[in-house]
Amino acid sequence: MTSMIYRLLPVVLAVMVAAGHAKAQTPLSLSESVKIALQANDPSVALYEERALALEERAIADSQLPDPTITARMQSVPLSSFDINREGMTQLALGVRQAFPKGKSRSLTRKKRLSEARAERMRKTLTERQIALQTRTAWLELYYWRGARKITEESQAQISDLGGIAEAVFATGRSAAQNVLRIDLETSLLGAKLVEIDRKSDIARADMIRLVGIANAARPLPKAFPELPPFPSATDMQARLVRHPSIKVFDARLDARDRDVDIAGEQYKPGFSVDGAYGLRDSRSDFGSIGVALSIPLFTANRQDRRLNAAKRLKASTRLGRDAQLLELNRELGRAYAKWARLGERIALYQDDVLKRANDTAEAALIGYENETADFAELVRAELAVLDTQLTLLRLRVDREKSHAALLFLGGEDNE
Image (cartoon, rainbow, N blue to C red; front, side, top):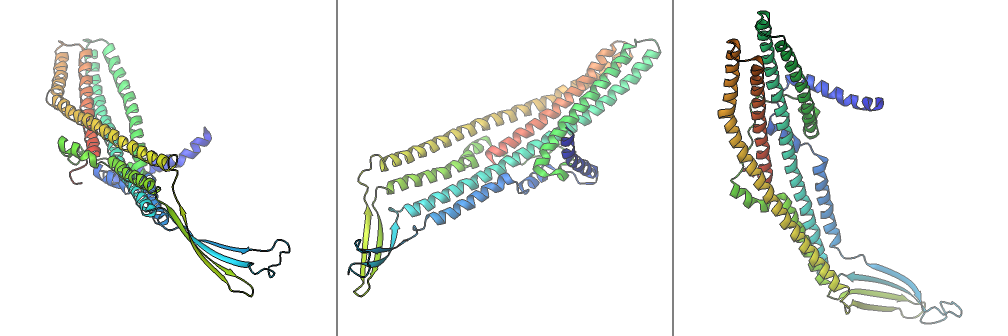
């Protein structure tokens, strides 16, 4: 345990130092945090670019002719004496052979590798979209807990003011001591609630550190509620799903599978190689020879046919994966849009009705308590109801923005 504390100490100190300078820094807006996260050269993004570059290198390498084969041999050596000068046919033969792959296998392999590289770049784009969504979600969560702390502190101060009223009334002998004790209990409970809020806020800030770094995560957040870029209409977003990066990954893989089918079809064609040789003899005329070797696919049932069928089935499985992914995106889009719309209705209800009624109830309870027509417990419950209503309203607004961010991830932004 002690060694773990020592390992974590530099990180804790760095966060404390960064937090100490946070007040002097400009607030970290939601749009700026996304920009920082996307420019952070995250290894989870960079690895796809490296894979794409590697596949492009392989595309060039795999489209080249095989290396020629050079041979050197002493042939027609008499075994009775091993005298290389005895027989006229004994010679030193030097040869070279060049093989040529079947049909258009080389160009098709090159196209396959380039399609695989394109799939990796689409995965990079998908990861960047996911990072933007994660950053927005983490920022909004941190914003909520910051607002929840402010609201809870204001409620705690309000409850403390009620404590002053309770003590004054108790001094006149018009109320019991339990009212004062109730205030102490509620103040302690709100203090415990603030500790829990700080714990959740630290977790949200840790998520931000992963995305934007310690220094930026320690910066304060703006007071104004954030505004995300507008998303297209539901119909447009559904139409755009076929251009979602996850679907484009499958499209690129389908292109690669098409090339696999074509390559398997080329294996029905004969392959050939060309070879030439030069024979050196001691005192006689040298020999020269040239030849062509063909590989003829006569027995295709268990080789070429099977490979072609396998390539077609892999292509079919990739297409089914694409269809399944498109259905999943449609489902996620429907859920996110429904959640966004219903949260908007609840926010309107809380803003226009619930919050007003909660405040009116608290004011009426205070007046009733001062006029001895309402008990103290009812007054405390009314104040806590205002706190719960304010926290619920803030949570609804933040959750709606999270749904907005999810819609931007699924359907894209208008400026794309």
